[in-house]
Amino acid sequence: MRNIERIVVHCTATQPTATVGALLNHFRSLGWCHPGYHRVVGPDGGVTTLLADAGVANGARGFNATSLHVAYIGGLDADGHPADTRTAAQRAALADVLQTWKNRYPRARIVGHRDLSPDTNGNGRVDAWERIKECPCFEAAREYANIAAHATH
Ligand SMILES: [Zn+2]
Image (tube, rainbow, N blue to C red; front, top):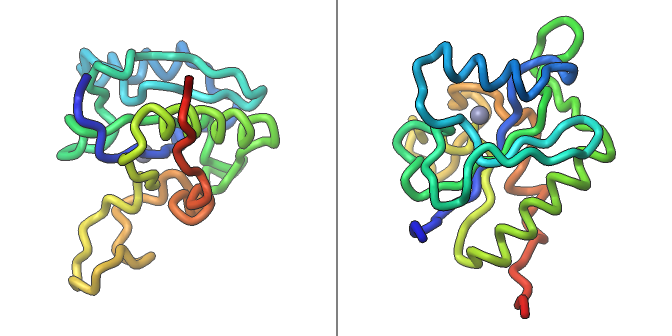
């Protein structure tokens, strides 16, 4: 297995009604031979595996070799503006995916895609104005700070 240093949370930057099939078509249209994410979580809480953990997904340039990527379908409101569009079922399923991965890869940090933006002013954190995109449209590192690895048997 690869060394997993971080688990990156994304939104698909689509309307919540987007389908997994449309997402895969989008990746193909970009000429990608690997999907952007390992797991995708729909508004109904359904989780689709696009790639096994051992595979390298195209989620965040420069970080992919040591990352796992999960996205919730959504992230754009009806006007096409960035928004946290997660449903209750989607929040629960996303937390489940993260807990499972954290158990498997205890040293991995959970971060939002936007937290991987360059720290332009070198103050040790990615400030809101430094974000190269809003993905996943919520504070993932803070929301999931309480997810700790549990021993599995
Ligand atoms: Zn992203």
